[in-house]
Length: 428
DNA sequence: CCCGCCTTAAACATGA
DNA sequence: CTCATGTTTAAGGCGG
Image (cartoon, rainbow, N blue to C red; front, side, top):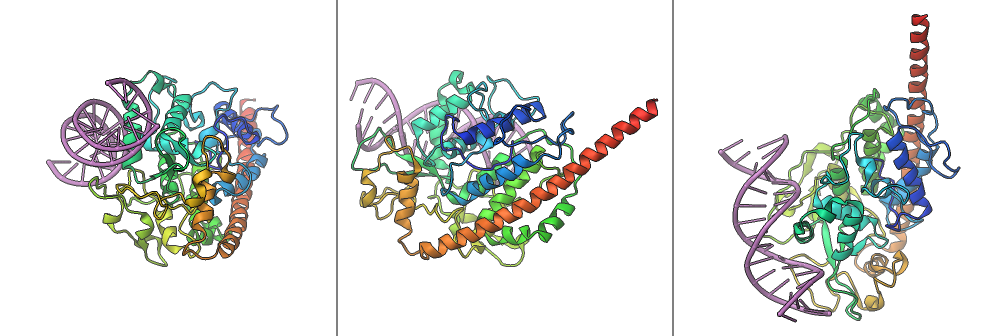
């Protein structure tokens, strides 16, 4: 799995960003950078793959991806999001899901994807422009990206629906009641659970690259570069850290193992109860290990994330992953009236037509932002300011890490070259 | 063995 | 009535 650096705005992967991600995909598949990529395309060479040492110093793509990473974690503002996580296959690559996730010994297209349904749904939803999809579109996305399901028994759709209903990561959003555009509701990912889902994605089995950079070393660098401050200050930064972990795991950055961001917090599942929002999670200050969670509050399917939980409580700005992703979802197991008092929609979004408006500007998500920003939360101005600050900090932090990665890969390259020459001399 | 996560199946309700 | 959607329950596999 490549670094989670953003989201595409088009599931057809035809956006310029998707090209970049496709390039990344190629990088992962080939272990080296395609020479012919255009200048705007991110460039990288895998660390840890054989014959990947030639261009270790070129991390331009990574720098470029910094913005995408920031965009990913900071929500719906800015350019279309692109994520190699989901969008790496591009159009010119045979459709097989997020193939960059796959280890070199990846399975055939007809084998079952190594992702749980919740992750598949998450990918599908995040892949959508509005970050909201009707179940039918979720089916389609899964089918498009995982041909396995084309021939699989139809039960998988039931499983998808089951997951949507049961997994508190997913929230149902009523379609505008003014119009009837297909059956059913839209499904979104609860922003609070995005880090969890990303963490879960990260935990998927992939080949981990070889690396020699000590995690402790990285941690110290993080501290020196204020990344630590970031990760403790906001959920977005935490998400960014996880993304960086992902990068490390995938060999984009070198590290023996992921940074110790994850935790083994156990989530208690309770089918009978309504799904509660993790905003109720409370954490104690000053020590990431003192995470305190009411087990009754969480019945989440997906992997937990200490970072998410920590930040959920720490953040004075917003516990959500983005100030612009302040959703108000329809509580599961409760039917809400159509007056919009509890649901995702409001009076004003009755004209919002998902089918006709694939752009986020007028889509559900942004509409919801507009709606919820008027509620009891701090003023949007303040939050936007905070968002920008976080944005800047994130960029700075990511830049520091990238710089580190550049140094590291340079060293690796030099060492590798030296070894090769040494061996040649010995042979002589 | 227990527990939690996840999948699968199925029954049922609702609405288009 | 059919089909899609959504909820809920149950059972079983798997791994920690």
